[in-house]
Image (tube, rainbow, N blue to C red; front, top):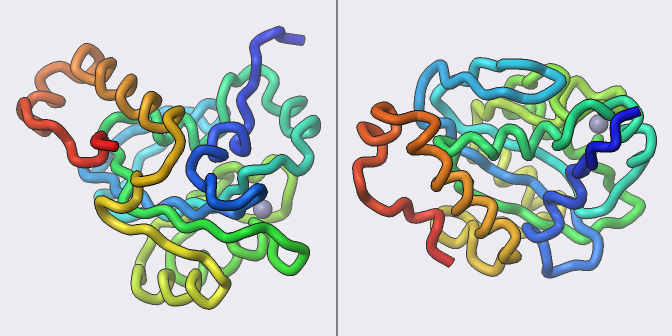
Length: 199
Ligand SMILES: [Zn+2]
């Protein structure tokens, strides 16, 4: 057994929804480059389209031991691997207090109505196809989330009032990006600041 520490999605997501003790979280994320390849740990390298993706997770753990066992060789959850890619922008966050009436798996099923599943994403301990969808109908999805009781913060508001851990995480990934992506990074971002980094 490896002694590497596995950080669960709940630990990673907690700073996104500090409004409630236990939350369901939906993140809306934009992939700005067609064919962007992102390393996802146990899923290997995955090719993404230039469009919007939506992910559902929670700020509390169910079955963390089971997940830890199946993922012992990986350090992070799929969503943390995904967001470690510096090109991916967080364009919305939606939070809802957790209760017995709605699970992340219910939400994943609803999200699937508005997009295409990225098969195998964050589904270690459930029967869902995926907890990440490539969004085809963003208006429908936002309406659905509102009906389910989520409060969404979009655009520049997405990263207001999130925990410092997330801001530090995003700043660190930007610092590493130029080294890792070199010329592509410079062409893409120039020398300008990206708006998702201001607190
Ligand atoms: Zn599920």
